[in-house]
Image (cartoon, rainbow, N blue to C red; front, top):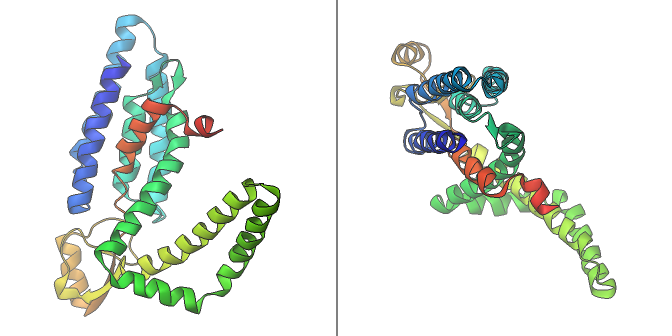
Length: 261
C-alpha cells in the first residue's frame, strides 16, 4: 500500500515541480488533492485493517510540517507552495516499512536541496553570462574572504604531499568552495533575483520586495500603480522540484547520512 502512495506522491509533486519551473506558481489543487487523498486513504485503511498508527503519523507529522512551513512562509523565508508540498508528502506517505518516512526524507532534503540550489544557481549563471563577470569582479573586491580558505588549502596540500593525509585536503577544498558559492549567491541575489521595473510592467504572479513570498493579484497591481512608479520584484530558486527528487533519493538509498558514513 505504501508503494502506491509513494508513486502518487512522486507524480503529484513532480507535476507541481514542473508548474513551478514553468510559471513560478503551483496550482492550489495539487497539494489540496494530495492532502485530501492521503488522509482519506489512511482513514479507510485504518477502518479496514484496524491499524490506526499510519493515520496518526500522517495527521500529526503532516500537520506539524504544514504549521512550520506556513510560519516560514509568513516570515518570508519560504514559498507557500514549498510548505504545502512538503506537508502533502507527509500526509500521503507517513511510513515506509516500519520507519516514519519523514525522518529520512527531511535529512535527505537538506542534502538534495543544497545540491539542487547549487545546480540551479550555476545554471542561471550559464544562461546569463554577465553574472560570471560580476562574480570575478566581486572576488577581486572581496579577496579578504578567500585569504583563510586559500591558506588552509595550501597547508593541506603540503600535509598531503609529505604525510599522505587527505582528510584535511578535502575539508579545505569544501571550505573554499563554500566561500566561493556564498559570494556567487550574493551576485545571483543582487543581479538576477532582484530587478527594478516600472509598475506598469507588473503582472500577476510577480513577487514584490517587502511582501511575503507570494504572487501579487490584479487588485494589488492596480493599487501599487497608483502609489509607485517603480518597484523591485524578486525571484528565488524554484524549489518545488527538489521535493520529488528527494523522494526518489530516499526510496532508493534510505538516509544519505548513513550511506556516506
